[in-house]
Length: 255
Ligand SMILES: O=P(O)(O)OC[C@@H](O)[C@@H](O)c1c[nH]c2ccccc12
Image (cartoon, rainbow, N blue to C red; front, side):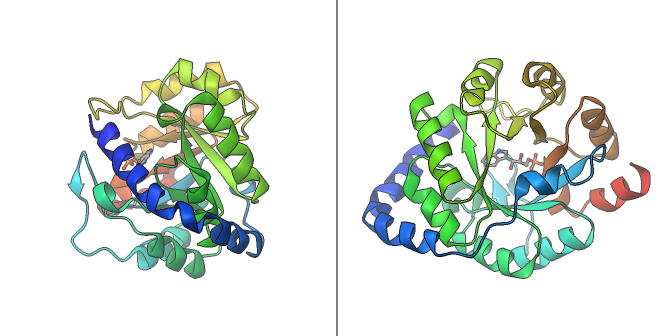
């Protein structure tokens, strides 16, 4: 399974990064304040916000663009009304790079999320030191105690956390840290297929007080309308935007 391979490759990089932890933590502690992702997503109650993703390739879809310019991409997203930017930094399967995040953070004024497979606190210190405002924590690849420790560590460094779930059981684990924001991933990590109705099922389980983000497989205005009607505050969109679909403009015109 792909996820196991990704995690193995991440763990090898983490191993090499461990010695840098103290240095990265110190750098993280000396960074200017973060921009709040939670505030950006609930700035305008009743409006569905878009977290727009910079992603060059994915294991399921391959290369999404011939010419990848994350800074130009992110600036275009901001102009079109995105509430926040997600930047893939995983190098091996998504062709990401922490340098993309650094450059994007300098070029926009909205919050920037580090999209990666976080397994160890050194990656969180590294994210903050690179300018990230928020990090993704994927319940599926963490032990519950490890998740709670990483959540606390990120919070202590001033980062917001997007906690990603793929099942009702994962939702229960996610809720033990009392997160402000939960991402419901519509993509089945084994088959790679997306099913938007998973967001509908999870809306009830999560309740109204958490900021809910529907992730993956969102392609058209109709999808955004549905997710909004299910009580979500935001969506996270990658592929459709990377392929040049003017979804943000369409949403603003017809939302
Ligand atoms: O490209 P899509 O189908 O619009 O999906 C975006 C985002 O949800 C997806 O990239 C994603 C969701 N969770 C992840 C975890 C790691 C890497 C990538 C992801």
